[in-house]
Image (cartoon, rainbow, N blue to C red; front, side, top):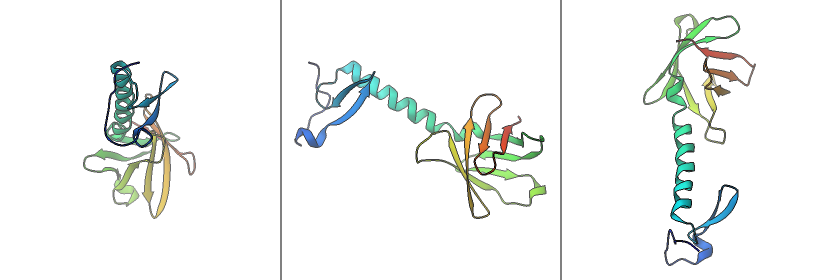
Length: 140
């Protein structure tokens, strides 16, 4: 049937996982071909790359879409933070990528309250916040 991609001494039921390749269920460890193995690796790598690359792509100046008011600068380094303009009298606010599911969702904790935003990477890059529907647009 194909090449065995993995083997160990555990029973088959303890070492198999079902994955979907082009809508055909296969079992890892049983009979994936080398080509199927590469497809799985490519799918996983693509999802990891999309997820890992979101926060750095938010780095830049941001304004509120409704009125164009400048808000501050998102800086990406060890942490990703919104550095608010002085008018807001607020310390930098950390921005996280949501680990619970959608790779386009970010979270911000501001004044003890959690805010979730949906990122659109289409130009201009934007974040739509769930609390009030406010939209931020990257303006650099």
